[in-house]
Amino acid sequence: MNFKMDLSNLKDTYNFILLEFFAEWCSSCQTMFPIIDKFESNMQDKLEVIKIDIDKNPQIAGIYQIKNVPTFVLFKNGKEIWRQVGLITNRELKLVFQKFNVETENSNHI
Image (cartoon, rainbow, N blue to C red; front, side):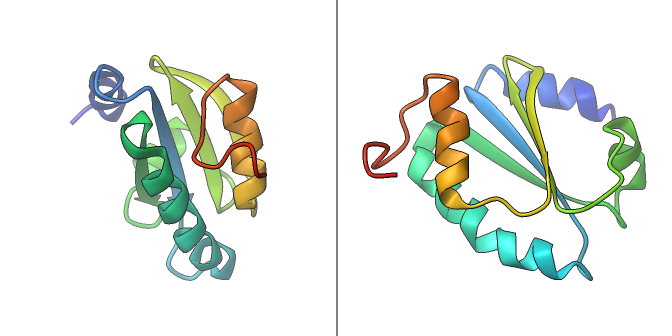
């Protein structure tokens, strides 16, 4: 399976794709799960989040040169447009999407 090719196929379905690289042993990753899940549900059909366990998928982590977790890689139209290593708040996520002119639920109330 060619992960990059599969990812490019998703660009026709979703405006944005967020790769969430994590590890089961990573406490910061566990902290991020509910934040990202809630953010994804608020974005409705604009965003698809793909969670990638680096221990189970080292080849994919290698493709994206993931050295630390959690790492978030955001794509628009199949191109990487943003990357974050470490914790991020819901507010910071909203600001990232507003930077790309995307309405988020309650975006006026950051």
